[in-house]
Image (cartoon, rainbow, N blue to C red):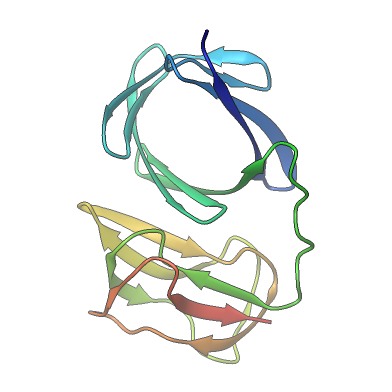
Length: 156
């Protein structure tokens, strides 16, 4: 008997049910998506087997594919989500080097604005604002080696 794990992925306020089976099958909103794990954090997706890299920290998921970075919240399908707070901190999804800092304290940002550019695994990873707000702290500078979960930018 094959077991599965079901999570809810939140993307731009839309929820998607993702079911991952032990045998490698994946369903997104009950539609089969061909996938094949090819290494740690590396997956081939779709009929053309596009390479995607996945990183996780807590409930956050980052997927890097075709030069683009996508950020998601994931939680177990029966677990309640915690309510968002007014204070928002952004951190690195994996060990990385800060290439550029695009903001300063006191700057107004909009959801989706690029705040910091990281480099990891020979890829540039944009860290984007998850909400509109004012930058209250910048806790990194170009050249810093940052670790997952360590706050890079705070927005209020």
